[in-house]
Image (cartoon, rainbow, N blue to C red; front, top):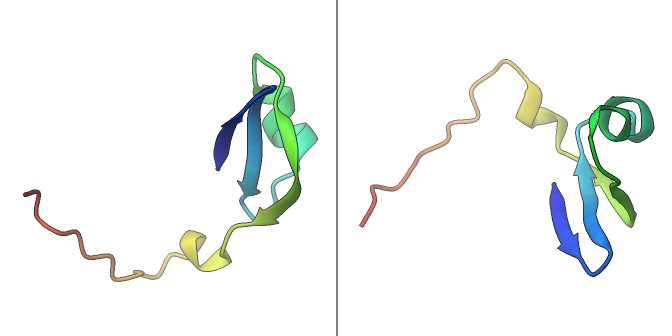
Length: 59
């Protein structure tokens, strides 16, 4: 997840197993900042099983 800060984009959350320097910053065309409390995303988001997401109709 990215957040726009005073000095640019800050990475606040990263997928499990992803290396910030190798997999994110090295692939980006501009400087990213690493949040001091950057956390790993919930691994269940990447599991092949359904997470039973239900979308609400647009109002």
